[in-house]
Length: 159
Image (cartoon, rainbow, N blue to C red; front, top):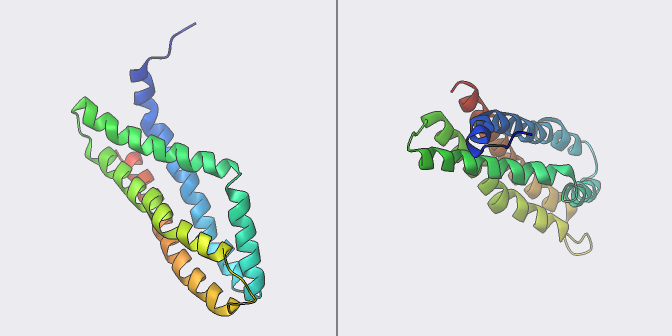
């Protein structure tokens, strides 16, 4: 049985990152371009309830593994370049775009919006105002996450 060498794994890190970045970008793309737009066609209160359900389900889904694994891969890709002293510009830029545009954006923008929506109370707040605010802001940041994932992936493909 062959032992797995760390250097062999690091040689595959670009390919793993391409796959991960593409998958997670695809999820964000789906939300930006048809899931969220579908919510515009239904009652605001129903949209809030469904989005809260999605946000609850996604936290227990394989998406969370993909989310954290792809972030880990981006960090490893960045560190690989620093440790090897052989900076490959596209790899460094790709990892930084992914970590900033996907991970940081999610943590500082989309998650707080999701938490605010989860605390919505239709007895004390107007669903139309709440949903319009959420939709406008969430989708803006989701577009940034989508583009960041795909740009990061393309940078590795053309490397």
